[in-house]
Length: 178
Image (cartoon, rainbow, N blue to C red; front, side, top):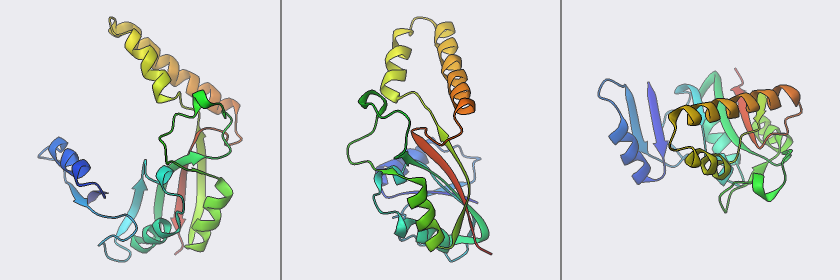
């Protein structure tokens, strides 16, 4: 069973409109700090594109821990305060977003009986920069495809070269204690 939630009704309406009839996915308007799910209901909770906009993640981690089954996995993304690229050009963030450090995340997770088991960082090309070049290639699908493949290759090379979690975004997996 897959359930997508968002606090914004408009986003849920869009998700429902894009859902195919044969997909077994439900969408509901809900606050991630206080969901209506039962205790230990899910094997996996995935949170993408939310924690960047939450300064104190304690209530969210607590709720994720509550709805996860023992041994269940929490997978999430968030901005990295210890990023390698500190220049304005590479900080393609919306106003009101927050960076988090791995040590602060680990402390909050541990306090909510979630163990950090894996973490990678990604050196993505900022959205503004990516689409500015992509649009310039709009006359040629072949050039656009080559550009996207080059960006993906660049990302892989950078990730292999730097094993110190200095990318702009962290991708983290935590497991609920059994």
